[in-house]
Length: 490
Image 1 (tube, rainbow, N blue to C red):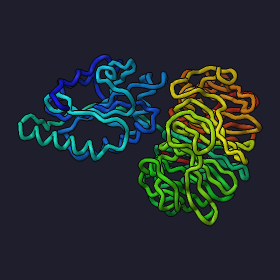
Image 2 (cartoon, rainbow, N blue to C red):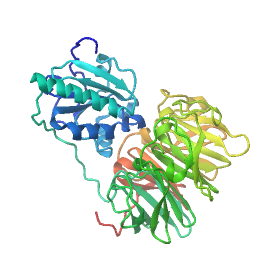
Image 3 (tube, helix red, strand yellow):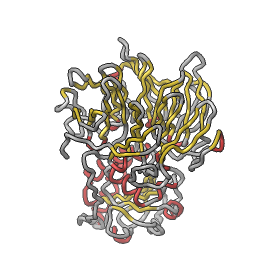
Image 4 (cartoon, helix red, strand yellow):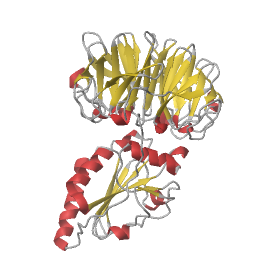
């Protein structure tokens, strides 16, 4: 800042998480304070978390990180939903629920994520928007600490807060599912346990794939490691995995019981990365997968594009559709725009996309035209919960879609519902769930931010993420039950 400006006090929040009570800047005098303005559905906001952890580790008790959660979606304003997100993403620092945008307005914030640095005397140092600014933040925080150490205004006294905790059980925030029909098998991304499960239709756990440690190691089931895996796709004897936080695509040889890496370096790609040999090409938060013969499509949530991995001899990976601009824009593959694509399904000659940040379902013609179109959805800030046709339809941050018997099932995640779409007529209707978060079986079922779908026979399986469960919805009666896992210790 060219001149010293007092940082506005934090106020107007509707509650605090990871803290026993309100956190005020006046109570943090002597610390360098880093405010993180974020919203939990945003992939770019989540990319900031590793940078914050690195800064906290480097500067210790001289730095105080405070999250200001200014929700984009209505569901994100709810304290219980925000609490689940904090647990899911491992956020340790205090977070204010700024659902009414009071602090957002006082600081003049214009987009997510935005980070603001405040010096130990309570004056603004500066701010930066977007992700990928670790080096700049490290420099600014380090310089500010050094200046105030010389002045004698730096306080390294530890400040401790109450961290949110939750028992998850056998599953921890399961993200995605995949089914194989012969013999009937269900594969589950046990995301926050950093592993995969192979499960019989009865619920019997047949295999645990991964050590359960967050890591990036190939090898046998018990020795290999993943880091918050999400999307799955199965072909023959191979299970493909979107290893999201490792920014990699992994392959599970189900017969040999071994895991290998097909694409990704383990580091997140920066900017509009291009393609190349799989193992030498950095990826950016791959979230879901879908197979079309030798092509493995990737929902690359982190760079707002679709990619494709050639499963043939070349083993190359490249962008397939999307300019990288975060938006809803139809047209030719290289001109179209997506916004955090998070779910994929192949069917009827199309690649369907759950395009979460625009609350839309998109379709890419897999035949000669190669065009992107929109089934339902209007734009970045057009969301809600409304059934109907075409422009009347509203979804809220859908994370999964599944093509089955000419119908498209959608995990309408932030509406806590399952929707059924007719992709030709562009109609949408509620299939299960009443729109309220909960954990209720039966004909009036409730879900809590479902994120993955799969079909085995006449049963629709649902990764009910915030309930740490797999639910089963009968396609004929729509009655919902919970899959009881057996043979797996906590």
